[in-house]
Image (cartoon, rainbow, N blue to C red; front, side, top):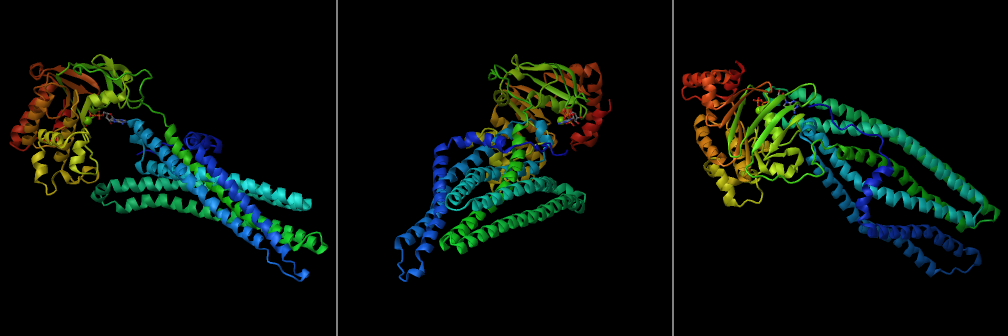
Length: 610
Ligand SMILES: Nc1ncnc2c1ncn2[C@@H]1O[C@H](COP(=O)(O)OP(=O)(O)OP(=O)(O)O)[C@@H](O)[C@H]1O
Ligand SMILES: [Mg+2]
């Protein structure tokens, strides 16, 4: 586990982020337009309410002695009030699909991009952290759209409408006070929010960190127990929680500063306006209705203004969330299809490693000038000390990484020149460590080819000699395998892995210690089956137990990334080198153990001694 591989990029702008969202929204331009029209209607109705109110107040002048109830005005007052919410709600209804769909599309794109990223990225990433970033990004997409399009714009519209009305009806001081209030308010809000944002970012980072740690810790539940390290785990988690707590407290404290400031500015503006209106009424230049109107306008303005502060805050926060999600999208794809990549055309699946050198990082070579071929339909076995680079061969063939020099060819085609999809569908790997999906056994076997029929799935299970075992389970194929398949034994897991590779039915097979977790007897049986499966396929076997590979067409002994010996079993024995020494050692320990299988780990140590 290294540090989070996604550094936050603080340079995302509202414009830049919106531009990335635009193509999705553009798809719904008519809905957006209708929603905007509804919104303008709602705002017009809203501004109309105080105007009608003023007419009402003025109409109820008691000095005339007779009081006529202005029915029409009353009714239009009610209608306007109703329209305000009606239009608001309607635009919500019209826009709902845009929000939900955009958020879905973008999240799906991030998810698909995550799958397109290299193994290197995924070995570095922390599941919990990435999941949290995507989750927060997803809600932020709709937040951002909603607030920018439907809160900031209409608030500006309302402010202009109100200012225009004040300007045409009353003396300039009303407009000046209103605009000055709004201006101070906006400047204050934006600058304080800008300052507060660092606490919000810190809070997010602490949150991601905490999530990553808790997920990592729970994934390693067993290991935690083996070493009785619950306290240690709590401590590690708490370090992240403490950071989160600090950041949250700071964020809330500064929020109070912001709110108090905003309320102060609105209060001052309101008082000044009411004072001007009161003076006007006393001087007889304004009616009581005007007084009510001015008051109502400002209070009405204060509501969206208050929103404006919150919205600026939320928009900025949504932007920081989106930043992180888009940072995932910007993560470059290390292994990608060449622009002119063609599908792999397989005839027999002949594999050729041509002077291949490779290292996971530049300072450390893992494979040096490895050169061998597997003619189509033949089997080549690779043996060697642990860490020699055997599994790395399989990863390179599958193109999880690209070679540093040399090339890998399948039926004469450089694997970098063909599409990854076609390459990978041609190769089946039974990996060294099998991890299963937390679903049923059936699902995990059928995963090899999701469109396979039940009969095919069962045939594959039979080939891997796991059918009888599955049938003996109370729930049979519908038995759940648990998180990462941990409810199955190591050997059962390996056989599920073999079954699903058999089901995939590729031209090229790679068995990376595919039977290492099985007892000798079961291994023998499966070995026969595997030999049958491998017969018409090109096969690469990686093994520690030499007895499993004696029939290979060629055996390659790998040491520190170099091929040190090669040949058939008999040739190598005759050569009397490293392979022969190893063979004798394994035979001896087998004989002395009599029936107790030589475990892979024993073979490990044996192999390490030349
Ligand atoms: N993703 C990685 N990043 C950096 N180094 C790696 C990575 N994966 C493997 N290595 C290193 O590369 C070397 C070869 O690893 P590889 O898995 O190919 O060994 P192996 O021959 O399969 O060993 P074993 O018999 O134990 O399975 C090891 O020393 C390992 O530490
Ligand atoms: Mg390995």
